[in-house]
Length: 269
Ligand code: AMP
Ligand code: ZN
Ligand code: FE
Ligand code: FE
Image 1 (tube, rainbow, N blue to C red):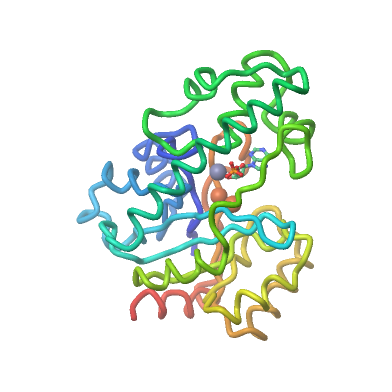
Image 2: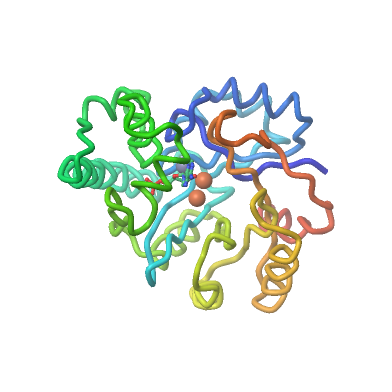
């Protein structure tokens, strides 16, 4: 079946409206999906959740830094008006803004002068800021020739414009998702340098692993499948779509339904 449990809209750092994303999901024949904006649930307000109830799963992505790795926690299936999740996400969004200010300072000191106004102009009003907005401002100012180039030269972990996300510990993100009634999943494990983090998080309540991800090669997929089995984690999959320009595979992941049965069972609990 075709699913996509990892997508972004301009309610965080994607470039498509929720409706535009939905059109892409429809065109691709995606049967079940989640929008996992960073620290934001606004996309769900733009969708007809009653009409989509058999297809849509609520979702969110919380980015953290842990053991010198970027550790992204996905949450699924919580009530969209969760009083547990909402205030914490609002605080994370505030912290993201502070972080972008710090990135701007570092970039300016390194000779890449961008302003908060320019970064904000690359985002929808009220949406949490992130590195892709900074990357777009750098691109518009002509400092880089692509979004990917901005990440490779300036914004990657350890790069001159990089500031880690230190406002939330991944253990806290897992606990928060569970407390809100959601299912906690580790995003794109292939991006980790330290796979030991998977076992560590499994020990504090992590429930799933994003085994199916466009950038995982067949060996990585097989490895993460075996780790999911070993640590009793369900498997999920998603494209991490943000923009047709820099996600050229578009939306949707083809996954055998039997590989998703554990995830679906957790969502129904
Ligand atoms: P942040 O949450 O501010 O740390 O930004 C992380 C976001 O940047 C994630 O959603 C990634 O999808 C995105 N990202 C990371 N590397 C790249 C890249 N090379 N090109 C485009 N987006 C990227
Ligand atoms: Zn993103
Ligand atoms: Fe992520
Ligand atoms: Fe993402």
